[in-house]
Length: 317
Image 1 (cartoon, rainbow, N blue to C red):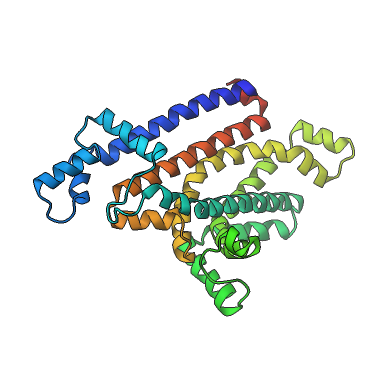
Image 2: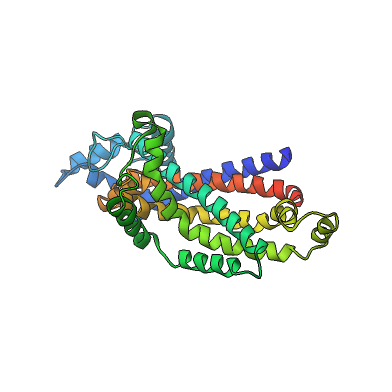
């Protein structure tokens, strides 16, 4: 297992380096892209543009520019916004990242727990009204996009019933964990709904596939009841396909977080990225892109390790 993790860590280093190179080339080596013209302000003179290029290292070769960019991004962290050069990009992103990561991780945990529970219930009560009812609810959940269910949930739970606080963000350190949790309940549920519904159907299908295996029949022959057979013996085998799809869906979860943050007015990376795109703030867009790609790569490393734990055969490949 240790050798497997080391191989995956070495592969992760290569992946992260490749991501930074590709993103840099897309943003700063594309023909026609000249950041210095925007940094120099309106109607700059050629001397001003040349001075800006020299200050930001834009008149250097591509390898040198890449090295300077990575140094300013990860070491000195002094990249400034195009639109507001008094605003440093990295600190702004670091202040927004906890909001997005809280949203993504909370939604991921919620969707995994709910989907597995629904899959187990559907298989346990197969042949009764519970199974088709759960699958109908899952189908309804798949059919509801975030931009529809989000405003609807705000109207019902905030403005109509006054059960939860309104949109916005409440930091843990300022207002306490409970207020932070209350402000995230609706965004978590809305973002997790689509994935929980899909994974519930997938979990049910995977459990049904393993129900006829020899080890399942052996477990029944030992006198275990059906619930114990499913949870103790069938669940682990059925989780491996879910783990694989989970790693692929994390990127989609980040994309959904952009809409969710907009609906619930959460000051996360999604809102920051949208503002940066509208203002053509290349440094900010590059930084957000790199961080999002890093998150997906690291999350997939964790998924690989979990997969190897569930299926020992993977450790030797």
